Each structure stands twice: as C-alpha cells, then as structure tokens.
Amino acid sequence: MQICKMEKLNFPIFDLPLKNKQNKPHIFDPVRKKWLVITPEEWVRQHCIQFLLKEKKTPLGLLQVERKFNVNGAEKRYDLVVYKPDQTIALLVECKAPSVNLTQKAFDQMAIYNRVLKSDYLMLTNGLQHFYCQMDFENGQYLFLPDLPELKRNQT
Image 1 (tube, rainbow, N blue to C red):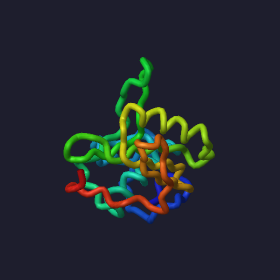
Image 2 (image 1 turned 120 degrees about the vertical axis):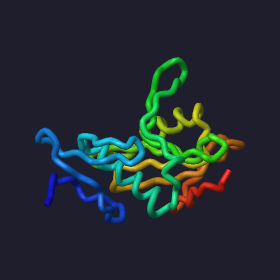
Image 3 (image 1 turned 45 degrees about the horizontal axis):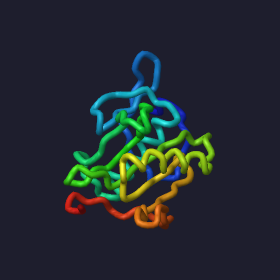
C-alpha cells in the first residue's frame, strides 16, 4: 500500500515505516522514536539516517537529529550529527529538499555551523546529490571525498 508519492532519491532502497495519520503521510524516525509528517526535507533526512545506519554501519545511539545550538549569538539547528564515543562530532549532515540546489550558500551554511561543532566530516545532500568532505582544520578547508567512511563505534 502506497501512502504517499515522494520523489525517488539517490540512496539505496530502504524499507521505511510509513503510515497515514489524520489524512497526512507520516514516517517513523528511529532516532527521535516518533512519527513525523513527511516533508521533502524530512524524506531526505530519513533516507540519510537509513544510509548511515545500514550502509555506513553507524550505531543508532551515536545519531542525533535537529538540535539547537548557538552560532555567534544566533540560535541555529543542525539536521543530523553522528557523535564519536568521546561525544565530539564525527559527522555533520545538512539535508535539503530535492528541489533545492546545492549551492555555495549551502556549503557556507554548513561551514559556519562547523566552526562551532568542529565535525571531522561533512555531508551535504538534497537526496539526489551528495557531497562528502573531510575537514582539514590546520589549513581551514574541507577536502572533497568520493564517499563517506564508515563511522563505527570504535572510531575516535
């Protein structure tokens, strides 16, 4: 039974838990452990979560979704992070809706966030295109990668 017609994304096919609730399509978020209304950005975020869990073998307990933090006195909210066991951030993910082009502005937003979060890796995705970067803090730049490494529990 198809609940909603969402855009096919450039991720492996995942069996995502979907249901109709109050005549609106919902998807279950395994990180927040609750049903959410499906928006285009949420569709991308949930695919990204499954990608990290199933393809990159990231433990569920190291994922955190949509948390507020402070950037130069302004309250911001990141989409998704993967923590290392020492509670520093291994990966910062910025999700955009499939209709949003991944421009320099999106990279700049992620870079500004990362000045505070200090993640080792960055991922920018609209579900159709994915960019992976490793931070080079010494030279103040990010290095583009062809793929994201596995973020296993034992990495620090």
